Length: 269
Image 1 (cartoon, rainbow, N blue to C red):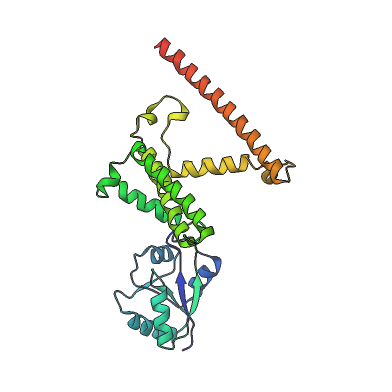
Image 2: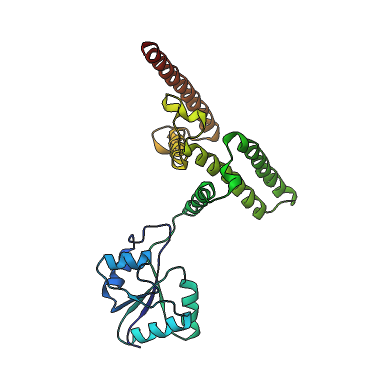
């Protein structure tokens, strides 16, 4: 064998063409690039960048190894993995074919939340789950309370040994479901509350929930993100309470102004 065999992996949660510079260099200099299907997202992106990809079709892992070995006899080869990296890598090791992993892209912390959003979308979409499809904010409210209580119970159980971290992980997932579920209901805009006439009454999606949280955390941590001098837990707590009070006052003022404006508009209609 004269060439090297590289197994290119990429996160399905990252756009297929957003690969590392190292990956693009390997792809550009490789003599051969192989994939099961040429129209797979990763293979399509590589071809769109001007690097031809050879489609091998529905081969077994052992047959893929044979193709890789044959291609490597003529120079460097890159196998474009499509969820099969572990199986192909093991098949190469079993056949004593040296391979080098090539990370094209990878998940950042929190990336798997995209999977949870996608599942929620599937469940609420036509052809999904009929029970999930008929839920509203009101029918979900008891579950939110229940799941929050079970999270607290799991945390308390860590001390007496009745719960393990595995239990807490599961309960946090159930609570997260309530956030995703209510955000999806809100995004659909079917609730009467979403048909008001002020900014406070507009539908919102899960990204809006995240944006609101990020803005709040940054705003309430000026000792981290700006010039506040709070340095002890007590000072931070007092600062948090003061900022929260200001936010409530500002929100009440904005809503009174918005409602007053709409009232005048309705009178003039």
